[in-house]
Structures are given as C-alpha cells and as structure tokens.
Length: 89
Image (tube, rainbow, N blue to C red):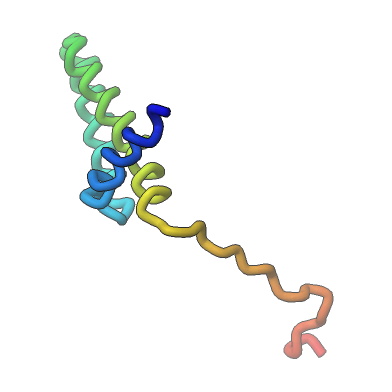
C-alpha cells in the first residue's frame, strides 16, 4: 500500500518538529496577524498565507505529538470521592 512508504518518509521528518506547544501557538498567532494585515490591505495573497500558517500550526502540533510519542498517555482514575475528607470529620 501507499501508506507504508509515506510513513517511512514522514517519521524521520517528524523528529525535527518541536515537542512543545509554544512554536505552534506562535505560528497560529502569526498566521492570524498576517491574515488580518491581508484583510486590511486587501491583499488576497496575504490572507491566503495567513490561512496556510494557521492550518500548519493547528495541524502539525497534534501530528508531532502523536507521532513522536511511543504510547498514549495514561489516564489516572480519580480517588474515591465517597469518603469524607479528614478535615470535615
């Protein structure tokens, strides 16, 4: 199938992506700023560039997180809430 060669190509490239949310949030905010500037100056190519940056920032972050993690994070069960806290007894 075609999926296997695409994954073989994409996995080494995903290691280069940052693992924190900061760069992706900055990319989305820069995309909004460029899009707003494009609307104000009526330049369609700036609006398109802003939309592309927003999409890349919003799309690449979940992809980078899901590909670079070996297993999904564990969900811890909450404590038993039927007990009364010691401070209220």
